[in-house]
Length: 68
Image 1 (cartoon, rainbow, N blue to C red):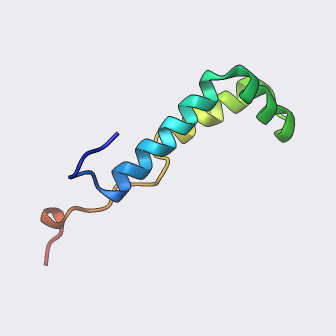
Image 2: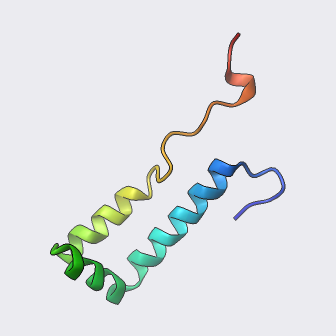
């Protein structure tokens, strides 16, 4: 999930995506979330998959991308 040169944003994104993938992969967990949110299981699965796209927002600008 990371090495010495992994940024805080990359690490957080990996953790969030791993968590969402775990939710999607366990039907009973999805069913529990669906019950709590009063939504169909398919909608909860869709929402989890959508949250995996950019779970921590857009990536920060790198130092060499910034202009003075």
